Image (cartoon, helix red, strand yellow):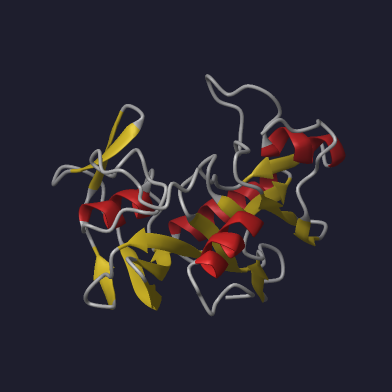
Length: 226
């Protein structure tokens, strides 16, 4: 989807130290080779020139994206991520019904070009998940990546036989019966101690419109603030 350079994503939280925006699907988080047009970071910096992205979301993933105002705050967030004190919660619509309905995945992940692969020689990767709702042929899952490896949630869930709806990269050639045009993944919540005051901050991003519509079409009871 083409975007105007003036299309700043909705702001979820902003103060003198940080900024959280609601990144829409289809917008890259940061500039990288092959990315055309403005990225989320480009749009944010037009209004806040010193803003620096703290983490990334895949282009297709919607939801909460965190920026730091300045190098000092960014360095503090790097420490918080290293200490695993930044908690990220995602919603994922997956094929099938995972069993057990709640669990932990600890398969190491290695980077292989533009893909991630499971490998005993990879870096430790830890995902916690629980099924929120079972629908016909799919399930709505809450997933928490304790570590932050490349494509971690997408790979971990696919490797357990439950690729995301819309997944083409890790679905092993299986056609998506729902024909959703992107991976059905949404960064719902960020929780972290404020980098200056240490008070706990919780920010939630409303479910993206396309995912709300998809869930409604499937008869979900969770189309609001999940």
